[in-house]
Length: 223
Image (cartoon, one colour):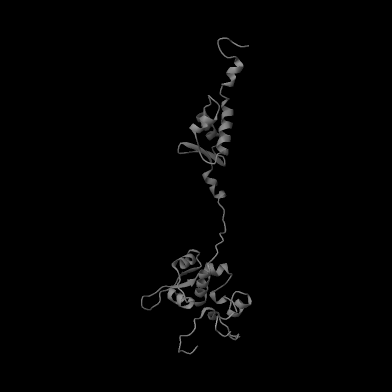
C-alpha cells in the first residue's frame, strides 16, 4: 500500500544499496574488466546509490590474500595483479627475427673469413665505408666482438666472430665455414663476373679467404 507521508516499502527498496556481498561482486567485475586501475571515485560513480565501494574493496583484498592474484592499490586506484612470487610464470622467451642489411651481411662475412680484421681492412675489402650502425648492430647481436689491437700506428681494434655466431650456424670453429665452391653451389654467391671482367676459371683449391680477397694493386702481380 502507498503511504501518504512517504514512499511505499517497495519504492524505498529501489533506493536501498545492495548487500555488501553483492557490492563486492560488482567491484570485482569492474576491476577485472578494466584495462587500467580504477579509483574509488570511479567505483562510487558505477555502483548503485548508497554503496560502499571502500568496504567492498577492503573485503576483496582480504579474500584474495594468498591467492594467485591480489587486489593491490596503485596510487589512488585499485587493480588485480599477479602475486609477486608467481611473476616468473608470466614471463616467456621470445625469438626476435632481425633481418640484416646487405652491408651487415657483407661485413659479417668479411670478419668471419678474415678475422682478426680491422675496420679499415673491412672497408678496403668491401670498397666502401662501413657505417658505425652496421658494426653496432653486429656487436649488439653478439655475433662479433672486439679482438686484440693491431701493433700498428694508432693501434686499431680488430673484430672477430663470437661463439654465439658459431652456435647460430652450428659451427665448431671459424675453420668450419663453407668454402667458395660450397657457397656458389648453395646459390649464396653470384657467379656472374663484374662488368668488363672475364669470368674466372673454377679452381679445385678455392679457399675460404677468396670470398672477399681484394684485387692486387696495379703494377703488382697477383699472389
